[in-house]
Image 1 (tube, rainbow, N blue to C red):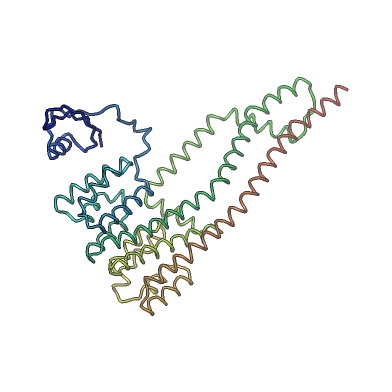
Image 2: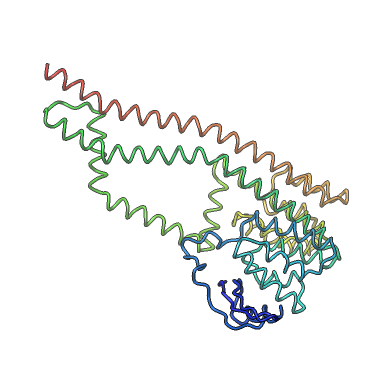
Length: 402
């Protein structure tokens, strides 16, 4: 959405220039005319135009969106109408993408549409869970409370993702630097030493000859290696566009020895937390199941869960329907069954999510605690091998010259 620079005439005859962020020239002019100004000219403000590559506000940041919802809740509880609340918040939002969407939403709401309908037009940017929560709040007449519950849900998901990223950052950096070090040694250090050793016609140790051979092979086939890596990247991105390929890749994830539990348990946690939120908001189980399934990141599990609505329509309980998917562990099924029999399904679903969030956190901490020493040992071995390959020939040369 572009920035505009508007030249305006006030009632007392003054000429002023005002910047404005608007979807079009027409909307910009209309805004100032409604404020009582005489609009003399409206021009694009090219100075504030950002290069697409350098822009950091293309996506809606989770924290910005949670803050927006928190402020929206406060305004609704204070008695402000929806369109006026959004209009106030538009001036406070810093993320330009979110501001652009909110301006379009405010226009739709002012035109008579419900808030859920206005946000539904931008479903690709907002989760279906958020739109469903808005719909539930409008139906129950308690929109502020429903958005508040969604905020708790979104904050929990965001904190879990952030914790996982933070835990994996250090090992990832170590692994990257290990490969960079190996690349530099093989391509720049060892080839120079091989020329130096050749001048002395000394017999090189086996470890040095092996590493020099690898180094020369990498150098001579650098173009092919780079091309191979590029092909792998292109193939990966192409597979991400194909639904069947994504299902296949996600099925492989569920077959990895230790990763299977993490992938499955995280999907179970997301599904149960989302379903609990929607049921708590007043949405029926049959309507909430498809929306909750969309929260599952694993495409293979999502495919297996497509039969859930049909099974429930046929009179089966939620527990039995979930059991048939073969994606839910026994503990989760037992807890959900207890929730159904005690008429406290929503509460039990949140308990299931909490249990598996704690288990995932524990498993990730264990993996990270194992990865760090392994990576450090790996880096130490690389350095040790390199030092041996460089210094052993030097000792041999010293013996030859003596």
